[in-house]
Image (cartoon, rainbow, N blue to C red):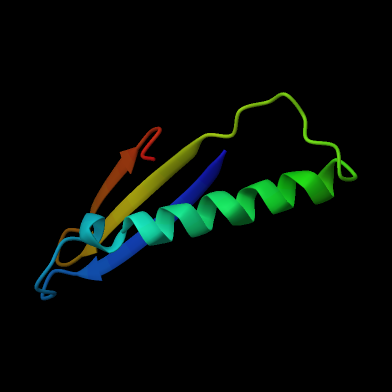
Amino acid sequence: MFVEVKTRSARDAFAPVLAMTKRKQRRVRELALRYIEQAFDGKVPTLQPRFDAVLVVLGREPQVEHLTNAF
């Protein structure tokens, strides 16, 4: 499992989920596959990686949201 964490303050103009662009998701997938290849000596295992996201908004009472299979 790979997790992307996005944090914003309550004063920010946009939600953390908006920072997870398609380009960023593609980059995380590419890096994850490279990591897996290195961890398994160049052999790609049959496992399917999962990509979750944790969205955090900091304020008086921080809000945390965990998105399973976010992308």
